[in-house]
Image 1 (tube, rainbow, N blue to C red):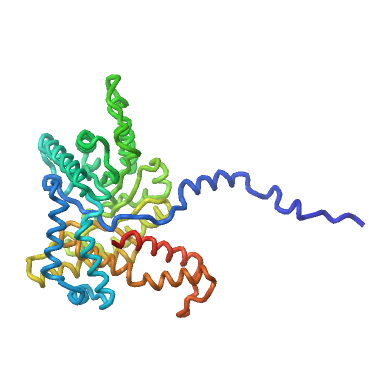
Image 2 (image 1 turned 45 degrees about the vertical axis):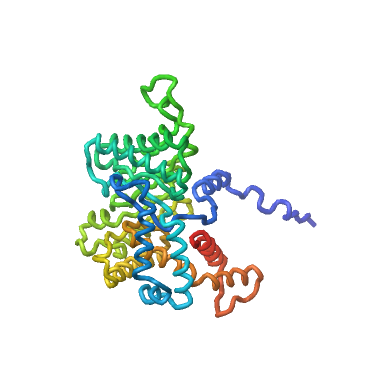
Length: 408
């Protein structure tokens, strides 16, 4: 009788695809398995000609003044934002703490749309003033955790102006501080051509290397070692032409320099021909663009940010302030429900509605989420008829980490 082969030894041998190892390495590089960490809940952008060492303090004081006048306690917060009573008390307390100690998490000095076109000597002067203000904020311990400039777009046809502003800003800060303080990032707007991204990444690489590494430079120039690490940038998605080249490989091709993608509601909706009253973050066309951004960058580590509301209170009357807060809170809530945990704020009043909405969002389900994770880890029923999948538990755990990072 013939011997039966021992399949325990041979089973599966030779069946593993020869290209698997390379594909798996590519997967790990393209989709790094990183846990959700701290991300700013907002970006505040201030036109460069109005930016100074007093900016952070002025925004703090104006926001606190609005709270004192129009949001005195939890009852008022519950009425304005529709937040349940017990939750309203916790949110009100945290909003006051946040405004007093860290009113701005991410600050962008705007040399683009909020600033406009100026003669070169004028913009150069504002670059110097901005660098001086950053140095003063850093010395006072008031420089936000994230900060940097928004330069002009290459789509304007004059990359030289954008690069000159960036170089002057970085050099000015480094010369005054001695190094580039932590948290620096630069925003690159209106990316209408994919090629602009690689070109801008090359600009950052040369800036890192210092003047000596630039074409035509004399030998012995100053090195760029004081920049303190790898320079990264945020692209703005502000045109329908940008969506077709958004993909995971894009971040990989830029060598890790692409830190985030920020949605620009007004240029995007204008490019689609939407009427002015439909230029809003919760328009279905904007939902489509954000979903494309999410699909393209899911798992890559590239952060996503929503856009802004271009409105401020019509007056200092309570009705007008409350109306603005409710509208802004609706948009912030829309972003949060769609998985965009950051947005742009354009006025001190936005800080109040931003923090109130974000904190209510994170606190509303915090205890229930924590119980579900504990039940899963202990292999017991969570209660309430919930049957969690591993992917859901991972999402809940990420939500808890995000809440812990965002709450003061």
